[in-house]
Image (cartoon, rainbow, N blue to C red; front, side, top):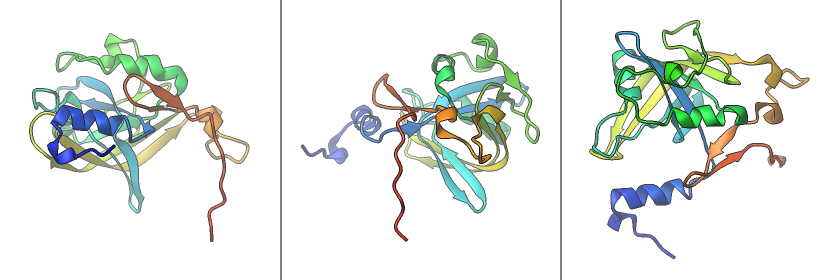
Amino acid sequence: MQLDFAGLDVRNAYQWMISTILPRPIAWVSTISADGKTNLAPFSFFQGITANPPTLMFVPVNNREGVKKDTVRNIEAVPEFVVNLVSHDLAAQMNQTAALLPYGESEFEKFGIAAAPSTTIRPPRVAAAPVAFECVLDRIINIGEGPLAANVVFGRIRTAHLRDDILGPDGKPDPAKLDLIARMGGDNYATTRDVFSLTRPR
């Protein structure tokens, strides 16, 4: 089978991409509007970029009408955000925050998700998240136009909060204790519980 992406419509191209680029880590991003309203939404086009300087990225695509999502609108107004990682026990709450709410209505309040104050930026973090990265905006790069076009958000990591119970005896994060989830195709998710090791060549 061979797919000609140049000949696919936007929705089909998107579906093929999200069902083959797997697994995808989840950035559960909290932001705040200029008038202080909080927002919380998940994104699975997410990755670390570099440690020099510490930078990550996530990609909110436009909605089906070609309109920027609330997360992007907030970051354009208040250039700060928290990337919260999602453990298995937070999966149901994370999924609720994918719902389309009117702009300005807080997912923290709507779905009863406990927030904790950040230490260097204004948006709060998810209190129960195993890891939360406080970020300031580096830049937004727009790719494409209209429905499902990308707003690639790059953030400089200022501070990270790690729950003490996810650390192993060596003081480093233990993958089993982190128990993170990742997006698969459709409504499917995977866990990071199945781990194997390979020694890298020198």
